[in-house]
Amino acid sequence: MSQDPATPKTLLTELKEVIADLKAKERHHLVAAQRGVEEDLQATQRLAGLLSIPGVGLITALTLLSLFRKYMDANRRQIVALAGLDPIQFQSGTSVHGKSRISKRGSHEVRKRLYEATLSAVRYDPGVRAIYRRLKDSGKPEKVARIAAARKLLLIAHAVYRSGEPFRNPAEKEA
Image (cartoon, rainbow, N blue to C red; front, side, top):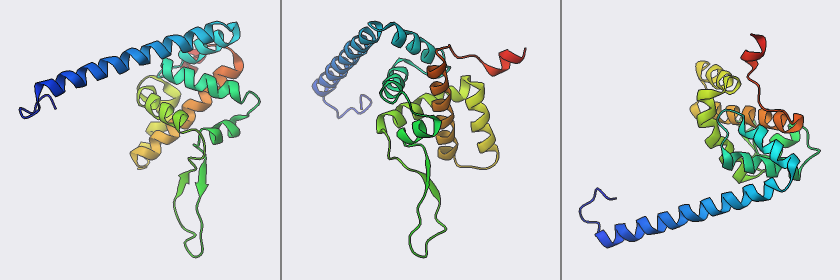
């Protein structure tokens, strides 16, 4: 947009101000959320554990923390369903050979945060990278591999949350 000579300079200035204002609001809300977590020692420890996972940033960690605290007794299968990452087969009439898809019945925000975190986790987390590479090497589409990696990241985060321990790289355990 700033490359287009027809764009008025006043419009560009206004847009930059709006973007700066939105970024300031985002920082304010993140600080407020962190303060809310810091009031509870257990939540602070669990947040630190989630942040220790490669690829998981503050926004993703806070989103997952709220999901896990809201559904404390949920098991692995239920957490995957609550995020809407569980596979579902659509069958209707004679079209029984349709592709499986994710249900998307869970939280859109959790799914979005996990998908974005997966972009980074595939580069830095060996467990997530292994799932992603295996699917890509077997010819699966990019999105299918990313969703599978997001599911793996969710399950790792859930295990870290339940244990209360920080993330440990499985490769380092063997050494």
